[in-house]
Image 1 (tube, one colour):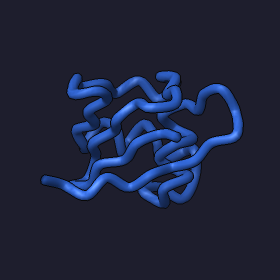
Image 2 (image 1 turned 180 degrees about the horizontal axis):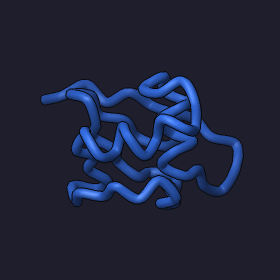
Image 3 (image 1 turned 90 degrees about the horizontal axis):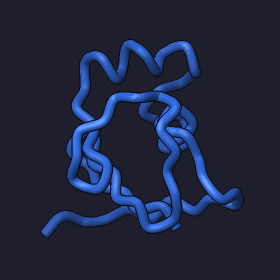
Image 4 (image 1 turned 90 degrees about the vertical axis):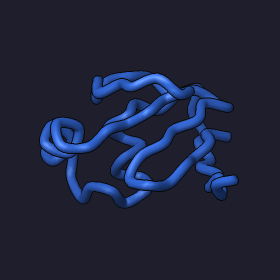
Amino acid sequence: MAIIEKVEIKEDFITLGQFLKLVDLISSGGEVKYFLAENTVLINHETDNRRGRKLYKNDLIEVASKTYRIC
């Protein structure tokens, strides 16, 4: 079973673009489009590449061989 890394947010939600920056997969917002074009992102086991996709508490994100849970 994969290790799930917890990512705490203080707001009600965070966008996928903000999340990728928060977990250091990208260094700036300008990189989001290119990152999503070249990498598969699963949100709650479904592929999604919308940088504005809202992530809420308990969402499961799988990207770059890692699994994260919003909490």
